[in-house]
Length: 111
Length: 114
Image (cartoon, rainbow over all chains, first blue to last red; front, side):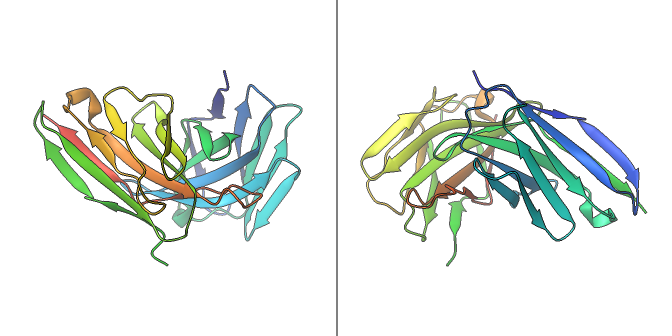
């Protein structure tokens, strides 16, 4: 059974710091992996999707990597800002559109 | 495009009542699904559909019914609401013809069952 784990569960950093969020999964036979952002009481905002044949994706200050063989993905946030404060969710595609989510990392960036 | 829309945004039910959560998408996506999000549990798949007339169960289907009569709509029915169904419900869709299968999520429905 596929399980997705995100460590740490919560993280507090000062503004301007570079940081890494971790996601691990138990079954390497995944289709894709997607990172989302969720603000309190809000829906899911897609940040980056990495297809199974890719190793990384970049968007602005965000970079996500995927290593299927080790069952790991990381989300790198450069020069963090208070506006980055949110919960970050990792989800692996067990099949087309069938996602298994981690429980998220709650990030707080202090001014 | 409106993307994925969900109604209502908020709902309070009494135990035993029934209701339907609506989900619609205007992107002509074949694949649609429902998730629930609970504190400490993450998002879990309830039901999904790979096209009109085809539905299947996800991880937590008990207490929920779905049908898919059109490509655009995928309603989720609670036949007899229970307090354990208090949750935030998200609908999602994707294009099965796209290599990425990227999921697009609706804004969610917050349901409280008393």
